[in-house]
Amino acid sequence: MLLKMPPPVPFFYGNSIRASDKDWLISFRPVEGNELWLPPATFELVLPAATIIRVTVELIEHPGWASLRFHGDFSQVSQPEDVVLSPISEDDANELAAILTKRLGLPRQPRPVLPFALAASSVNPLDDNAYIAVVGTQMPLGHFEGPDFEDVKLTGDHDRIAGRIPGKRYLVTGFYQRARSKDSLGVGYRGPRIRVMTISPEPDAPLRADVQWWTPPPSPSHRGSVLALLHSTAEDGHEQLEFSARLDPQTVVVGALDCSGAQRTGADAARLAQLALATALTEPAYYPLLGQPILPPASVFADHAAWAAWLIGRQPLPSEPGALLTTLGNQIGAVLEGANLRGHCLYAGGILALVRAGRATLLRRGMARAYLLRAGTLQPLLYEHILGREPEYAARMQQSPELDRHRWVPLSAFTQVDLPGTTPPLEIEVQRGDRLIFALGRELLTALEAPAREALLTAALPDVVAGMPPTGDMALQGWGIVAVDVEGA
Image (cartoon, rainbow, N blue to C red):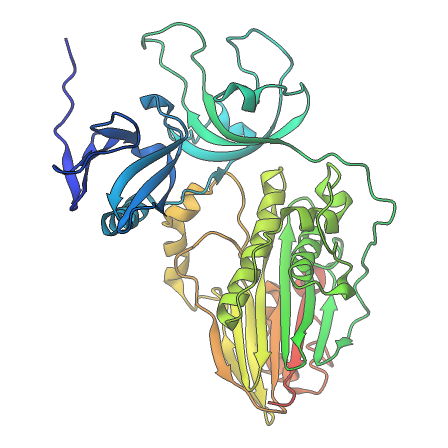
């Protein structure tokens, strides 16, 4: 008995091409009067919707006409990973590409997962055809129909997956396929698979002889117009750190970082986040790895600078202040989430600020607070999402599909993921003599609810324990104050 597919559901009808949903496939057919040259001898192109990674428009030599290039895993329909659909009118190509981008969430980014999520018996099983990224270990040679990588089987282009070394770790991106049921037809391996799109060996270089380990300066410390009071945790080192750099004589970028990590690695999270900023802005005072990245050692914590340089994105920084700070925050996220993909649990929040020509732009993520001190008057600018100020915030975050897709690997507050409820950068006017003050550490934020403690921020040295001892939680968990004096506005 033949299975009958549901009728196609059109969603685009242009002058040269039309597109329809056909169950799990997308069908592309030329409009009468147009003939497809690519793929050759094609009257209808069908591609699986779930495994399209990106679609791009490419102009061809005929004016007013273009091609659509699809990239993804199209093995289920016997197509290569790159498929070109041509010719299409340029207007149709642009409109159809925009529709597909919105409908399918293109370009797809692989979901980071840890190896335990690959198992068929996982408590929160991955979706079929989930596009994932995982760092795992190649298993010893066994039966050709058995698993070969973290209890799953890698499939795909033979040349791409050949030559793997047992015991070596690899970063794999690809489409996850669940185990087949016992009742399904076919013979051979029935367990979960990954259809590999990219695979690369994990770095395992010797430790550099000239690794420079950074020690936080004494508190308080000055770097130009930036004042920092940083008090380490009782046991785990500095989890609150400061960063500052001048982009030009009139522009300063400041980072006030509040970090944490599992198993006493909060100081490592802070150092990696700080180095992400230093590497992106090439600020030598923080000992970044300048120039091209080198192969780091296997352990992320053995050479913070090498791993920060290895993991960070190298895209040009935008000039618009809000976009610049957002990009820097994304780069912090890229470094920390790259470390978390390798089995760690690192987090960074805080405030990034840019001060230039009478204006200040502030980006706050996570638990941190910003004040403006002007002529002795303290004005709150940004409050954190704690202490009951925004009771709906937690609910929105729990319902976030973006968080659900990343439930296997911890996210940082500074992250590449577009989370709901996050506030856009705040831009304010500032004048010479103003001071921006950033408070870090949940325990300090709670203590600042006391007016007497908060009033200490108005002093020339905003020491929040001057004449008022720190609370027990502040002493245990650490805290930080970063102040920026506005110059020449």
